[in-house]
Image (cartoon, rainbow, N blue to C red):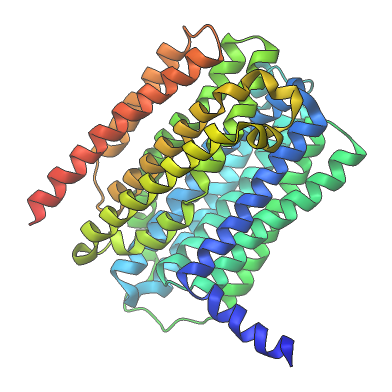
Length: 410
């Protein structure tokens, strides 16, 4: 009786926006549980190398997010053509995934040298992981555009839970960045299977347009969106690559440990972007959705910064323990970086929702500034301060751009 009562309640919860928040929280716990386990079992030296590989995977996953944003925006704005959009996006996703995965595998020797990896295998596994990660984005975008929160919640759960389970199992057997990347590759296929199951169980009525008619437009919008997201993920991830290049191995490892806090603060409120994006894609709802998002993320970011400052001992345990004690008194600074990046992410998606063209150029300018000025940093604090300054300037410009856009539409 108890199970029978609780199961419908759980299903109703996962069908709501609150369910998305819970599913993404579990996904992020899995993702950052993976990082915590890796940091503890590998130590600063090897974990710094793994963090570099993971940062590149995040950058390469922009195509996944571009596909997700394109399909979600088009379906939310024009739900009558969901069948055609789904077919075009999924076909584009598989083709693009194979091309990008092949190119990344071919670049494995370059990645190995750039990140000073112990061998070629982690870079090869990175290239193979790109394929399922990209396809998952297309599947999630269709579900997000239709606001089918229950199956989308299941996809997000499938991203996080298998990753931490496999990471623990493989790292206990073999403590290296190679075993950690093998866990990433194997776990990345689980959400693809869940997404295919969810889409197959929900047939759509025939669309008045064919898949071929919109495929070119889908590809063009995906590429434009991917460029904007590429700029954002470069801005939010290339600092570890800079750290590996300009700092010694120990300091780069400390910086990588601090970035665990940054990524936690960044992805903690990510569900808000997922839930608000369909509303930001419709003219009558876009301004209100953006204001709500900025207010919520600002409040949550301030709370995270204060908590990290006051509870630095607990935060140190979270990032890997006493091996990272050298960065403990600066963890609040990494929380600031995460709060700024969370707001930047919302503003980038607001630009995608309105199909604005300036966003990607503004964020790309920030990337150039980060790499150029960051290369002169002499330590962990200097690099983190430089990154924070660049993020803040780009954020303020994007807020001003959105204000101008909404004033023009009034």
